[in-house]
Image 1 (spheres, rainbow, N blue to C red):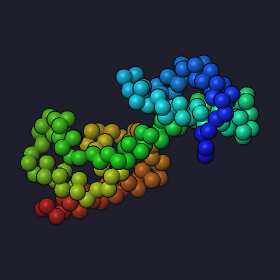
Image 2 (image 1 turned 90 degrees about the horizontal axis):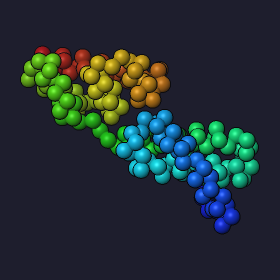
Image 3 (image 1 turned 90 degrees about the vertical axis):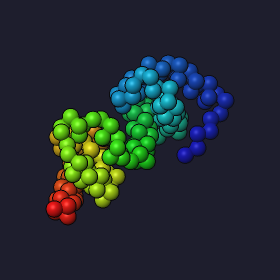
Length: 172
């Protein structure tokens, strides 16, 4: 989709941006963006506002639905960026170890070796679920936090458990 605006549309949009500054802040807050990170994600919310503006201008959505639609679109753009960033970032086992989680639970060297081995066979998504399991999250909390549908989430959990069992049997 082209984001080109005429001079008149650009003036209208700039006015909307001024009027919607607080709405943009609320959208960022609803996406659990900390206020110190607002500047980093502001442009994504702004892109959602621009997209909404263009759709209203084209008549795709009615003007009376602009406020609601733009708010949802701003949140969606921010969430899409968060997902893109999370997809690129693997959770290395060292990051979990840095939480001193294992030391606090009295883990032995064999357990740490198991965690290192299991991190090699888990997919990215399985690593994220596994890390949250290690931290003590319940299945439903994991699915909500990672935005995974329940059916897919339970399949991922089953895969994690199977790979953990396999790794345990191999180490015995």
